[in-house]
Image (tube, rainbow over all chains, first blue to last red; front, side, top):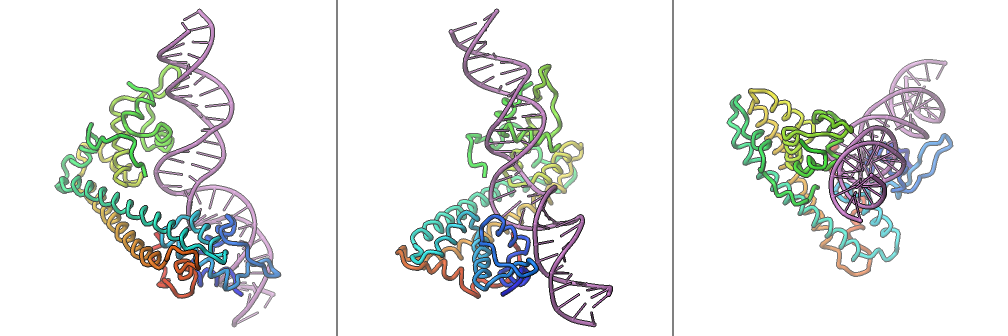
Length: 141
Length: 141
DNA sequence: TTTAATTCCTGTAGTGGCTACAGGAGCAAG
DNA sequence: CTTGCTCCTGTAGCCACTACAGGAATTAAA
């Protein structure tokens, strides 16, 4: 059994974040010592580590809650997990593509900057009319 | 001269977001009509459009404020702009690399899911000890 | 001209996922 | 017994918005 500091060390989750997860009901409330301190079992620490790893993989908390409830079931249906993971993969791929577009746009804009002290063509073209106007209500991330 | 609705249309910035930018001092306060409505000049709309384009490129507001103050100067020093843009490019590239790592990790995890209804190896390995433990206080985005 | 519809106003609160305090209490070592 | 560490609760801040509520002003139609 461990205090929150040890639980934080072992799970890799910040102490404040652990308390936040508890407040939000993302992980169950642990037991308390006589003095009112949180006491974590190895199982509870494993759960925190699980949440941390999922966050590291970029999953939002809402999905992680689904994962956690699936791990509670005996028949933790793999199909559902796979679907969620694949949707998340799609989102990651979309983000990568989006960032690549940004990179290209930025590269071509900043390549015109000649590093002198004169008027900046990058700022100019961003300020001008009709530059990147495919304003058809597209993906505002 | 235009009301906020037209300014929103022409700049591509949401009405609520325009008011937010004003509250935060990101763009200057426009004039008002007799009835108290905001009235935008074409220049002010250009500024809003500039902010929107920079946001589309992924620049944070703090950087955009620097850009805006540079556009106010006569000698809008290109060097500074270029440096900021290149730093931003580095961040974008780092994000892309990070996402690619996530993608690989997710792919290898979910590839073990056999889409059946049995215990899920992905959830299992995320719950187990000693999976991805390079816990040396690394980049928590 | 009256009414109905639309646009605008201010102010406040919520989003996600934490992080950072302030002000106090518990607890172990010297 | 004091020092210093860890822990407690509660609240506020971060970023960049977004979404109301409740009312006023303007415009268009009848």
